[in-house]
Length: 75
Length: 350
Ligand code: SF4
Image 1 (cartoon, chains in turn cyan, green):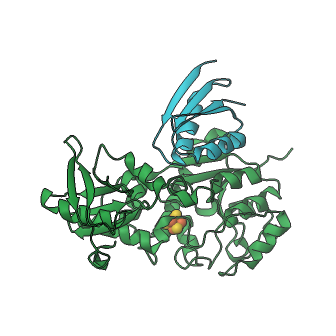
Image 2 (tube, rainbow over the protein chains, first blue to last red):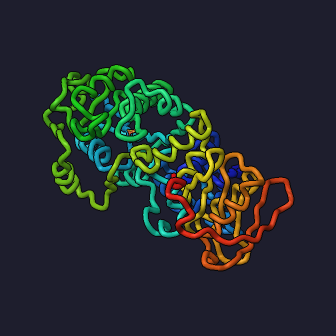
Image 3 (cartoon, each protein chain N blue to C red):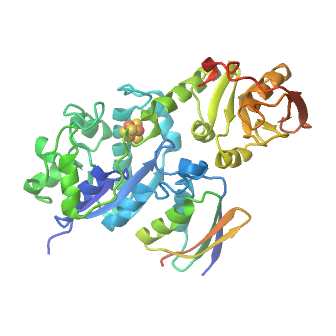
């Protein structure tokens, strides 16, 4: 299991979702991806995307206007 | 055991594609969704920018549709490739800058490409939520075969909601789907779709008024054309597309325009451009952040400061302090009298 980071700051939805989707394609089941973004829309879009495609958002944090959404590949 | 057939559906986030998928699911077809992001899609972005939109439309309707249907959704970034569709539409534009027919052909052809790339997943055909007569430009009886042919999808493109008004396609001829259980909707009347939605138990679905993208919006199209005219070129970048949705746009001189934030959300969004663009801010009073797009000369500073001051709380003051920041240079401070409402020419509004 590896831990990755994805910078999606200043991108507006659905770009953070698209970037997450494309990154997750390269990862293995059980890998963890922290998506760092600034569009609050990602807070609903990334979890929705994860639910649909069989992944899981395991944490959300907000640090100084930046959101960190943690996705576990493959649920 | 007979093979289970698979279809990929173009999902826009609207009711029609939602229904088209469900109609096929009822026939035991396995469906996955595909959604193309052109940069102009109504889904997403601006809801993050403006304050008053914050509670509204938080969801992305394409994702929402997929979730309702229990299908996977693949979102594909086609921003770069879409430029050619928008700039050189073979079939022309609709009422505004919307190249709907070329756009449909492009999206279906991208779906064909995607099916080929994902051959291992064994997709047999493509479906859309198109309905004959629904949209004046792209969804007419004559345009349906044009889309099928020019996209390269030919007889593997099925429109479950109006299939009965069209010649049978391969999935029908091969017996993968039962044509009798498809629909023959036509025209602008949305009642049959609403009744079907009710039958399937869908509520709370999205029903965008214009189309699926901002290019059908007159205001937006006007701003896009203004930008192209002012630059003498129709090139555009993602930032341009976004900025056309943010703020009030005023062009007091041909060489530049002002993008004046309308609320704190937009000011915050424009903050992100401070390093790239000249920005203007009233500092003695509350006021919106303003960005200059284009070439501005020092001799125009008084004029723009006066305009920007007009949109801040100091609009009735004798004098306000305005800061002009050119990236990489020291900020300049001006003391000026805000323009009166009459002095801000209506001609400047883009
Ligand atoms: S409304 Fe926009 S996205 Fe929809 S078909 Fe027309 S050009 Fe394409």
